[in-house]
Length: 171
Image (cartoon, rainbow, N blue to C red; front, side):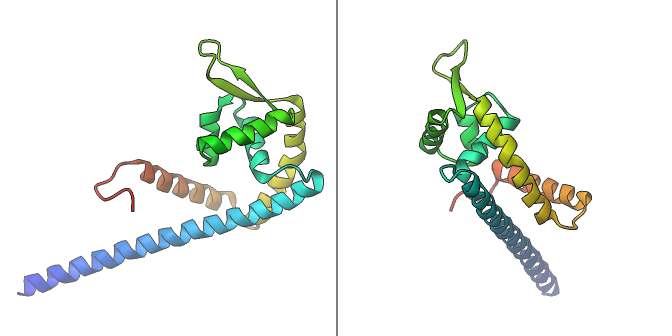
């Protein structure tokens, strides 16, 4: 009987610890979402002063291309978490403004790479420093090692979501 009581206590302790970890991970996710939302709002305010016709989403794609010029629409969609039709709409808008261009792969003409135009590069060079200043403000007095550890933590959690697990992956 005593063995069963100890086993039950152990199980309850483990369950409480798992719930605590789950709730802390939830709080971390919510805090990251809140930070992104506030940064997005402040960046959009700066963009509106520069060019009211540019949206955060368009600038996000331009920034991505400044770091990964020549990737395809699918890769862009994956990196900015947008579906195929949304990315097509956003890329079309950037093409119309002469901020990006589509260039077909040599071996597969149907597959297009997206490149910044000189005009697109100029916008990134103007807006990117504003975004960096806001991220610097967000970092405040947090040292680089703390940010590095947090970045590693978030990347590990993201990778965990990519691995199939024994439990349900969907709700």
